[in-house]
Length: 103
Image 1 (cartoon, helix red, strand yellow):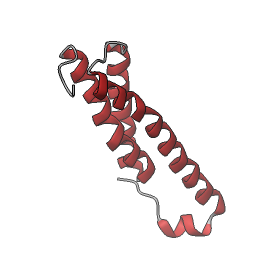
Image 2: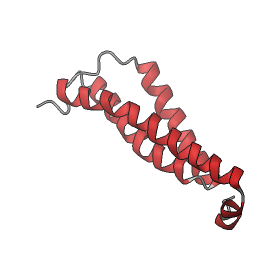
Image 3: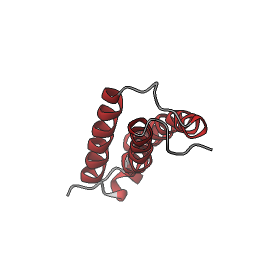
């Protein structure tokens, strides 16, 4: 498994900036998904999501998670550890026709 040496990051302003950009991107893209999950939880409906979208998001985010682990990227791991379960939740709601999470 390849990981980044923290000592290399501390001395290289380019790598420090890249890690900050990666962390900000992870926060924004994961955070942008939260309102959709909250809306689905409140309404109990995921009918506006296509199965294709959900399947591709689950697969894509799982691959990003795997890549993050393999490359030693905490930002990728953190973002996708959050996003994959949220997307799986949406798929479960869609498969059950809105019977999950309804209040």
